[in-house]
Length: 259
Ligand SMILES: [Zn+2]
Ligand SMILES: [Zn+2]
Ligand SMILES: [Zn+2]
Image (cartoon, rainbow, N blue to C red; front, side, top):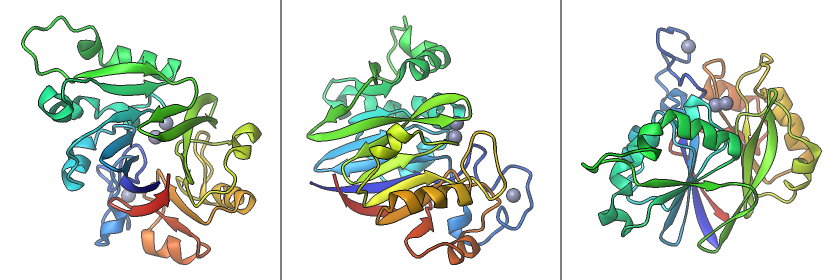
């Protein structure tokens, strides 16, 4: 079925511009160089699924006129991927959801982090209402949501194993330094591939432009978009040096694909 993928945020953990930085990208007038923290939204029929809830979720939701969330899938428990969870509150109240809690699909490790960080939500004994109406669900295999399948694929983020996701003809791989062979095998025949590409200079827990281009050469997706981008990569200059079917993503980018 036809679906839309919207980039809510394309930036690295500190966002671009970075607080206190006067570099060329942080002071750029090009709106593509303004990058909120990394997350995407997938929509089909009347359904909306998020991957991660960043500290910028409120701003992203207002910008993209998000009216409803049916589920949230988490890649891992780092602050730049989870800290916006509290801001789903207005979309989690019964008048919006019809009474169902928003399911949060998370691995065991991520569940532990979410539970610790948001203890006031999950262990609440609070009779005045107003808390996010969400519930943790295990992520230990493909998740079926309204006729679509989201398959978690393990990737290495430094030493940590975190989740990437394949859904229909698209896949989203943020925060990885290595993609294991077993996951590479499940990334064949893609129309749209999102890959972490932090910067040119090597990083212990993130992919670089050169490393992600090697993955593109092997997998040969129709189109590739880089994400989790730092202030080292100016949008226009970087794009000019990339192959035609590879582009830096940017906040607000919308793509149609087959789910
Ligand atoms: Zn991150
Ligand atoms: Zn900067
Ligand atoms: Zn991370």
